[in-house]
Image 1: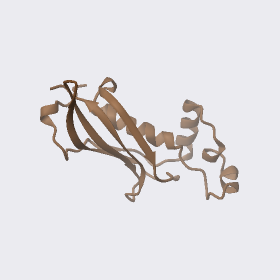
Image 2: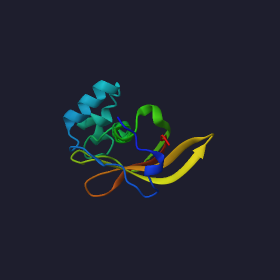
Image 3: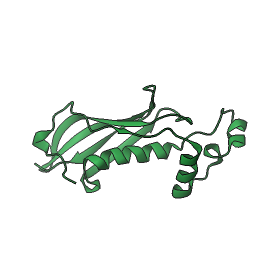
Length: 140
């Protein structure tokens, strides 16, 4: 992977979006198995309804993993200096996640060129499900 160069990116530049298929029960079952997170709110409709939810919904960390994919498709994992996210909404069955990023700051730390990227995961209606920021080191 060829990381973008610091001198070639500007504030306002957008990362290539990561559009994903709609969340379905298979996605949730596979994620539960892979992550070890078998919380019944995400896989058991009866449990979800007892919790006053209309149905199961996606694990928040599934969407966080999608944001990780967005970032590591843009720069190598070793270039990431920090990632922080905040959960802002529930990703329901049928939601189609799209992850986006936009450079919001360019700066230097101890001679290392870095960029801050605002990241978000939304559904097909443009509703935020996760928002956050990441810092990546870029080659000069």
